[in-house]
Image 1 (cartoon, helix red, strand yellow):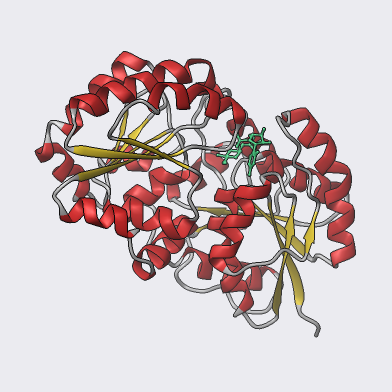
Image 2: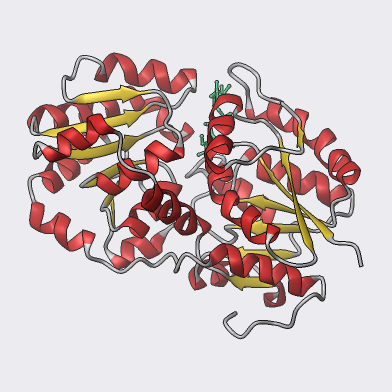
Length: 378
Ligand code: UD1
């Protein structure tokens, strides 16, 4: 029998990072052949991520435009993705998480009758506009899928509550854990940051880019600057997203702060060891919440709600919100309280054991009748 073609479709940097281990696991599964369809939603940031993992897309829709809108992206991806998947001979397409790429590729594949597998399925914040539009994207994608790979039993329960048939849902763990452990264990910290650690300085990694935070991002950045000014012994490193809206909000507030280093977006080979060497991550990203948990690094989440409640329950995450005064108080409090940071650091990682990608590949092989149902599946 010819191998089944499993196309991994993605377009943003975090999707590439979290799908790279899935690609490798499928590559080593007899009977399956992985291919990559890139939408190119994030041209430069995606390409940097692909380089780190040595992946090259088989097809690229190259849809990114300057100051692109969600509607424009949708209008460029939907007509092309399904058609391209057909040309690639896809027996199944895998999408990831909650981006415009994920939802639009899933919809377009569905129109073409191509089964969709959803990696990172079932996360829910419970608030349709937070994060925006990701919470809607992940719910809409979930309607279209044949297989759902949930990182935790909680995310599986969310899908069951929405009426999904449990037979296609697999609790696998988070593939971000697979990725961050592999890279952070293999690549050293940049020498200039290592020199700071050796000199006794603490590092804090900051990221902030969410659309729903953009209206108050200037004030949030100013608050972060005040926290840094109050902790001159701590070095803050913020790789600033290439989005013009983010750049324009953040740079004026933080460039003058001496212990705030603003960098270009970092490749994962720099980002993973940086996170691992930090005493705290302050972020509105989704993935960093899991990466912090996997590395045992406390995370202050710059949002009011999270779709990753397991980290809150375990104690490695705390919600700092997006109100500037509150986030200043929460971050300032944590940095002045090493004992609490220490307790957060020593909590259990609720996002899996680093075997998520292997389980996903096995579930796909089972779906196509290539293997028996392995014993360690829920
Ligand atoms: C998208 C995802 C978000 C994810 C984030 C990671 C959606 C709805 N959201 O949001 O979940 O956390 O990616 O980065 O899909 N740009 C560049 N060069 C790049 C990348 C982006 O110039 O390499 C510009 C784009 O032209 C656009 C802006 O940055 O103007 C925003 O990028 P976009 O991918 O549309 O949305 P994000 O807010 O990054």
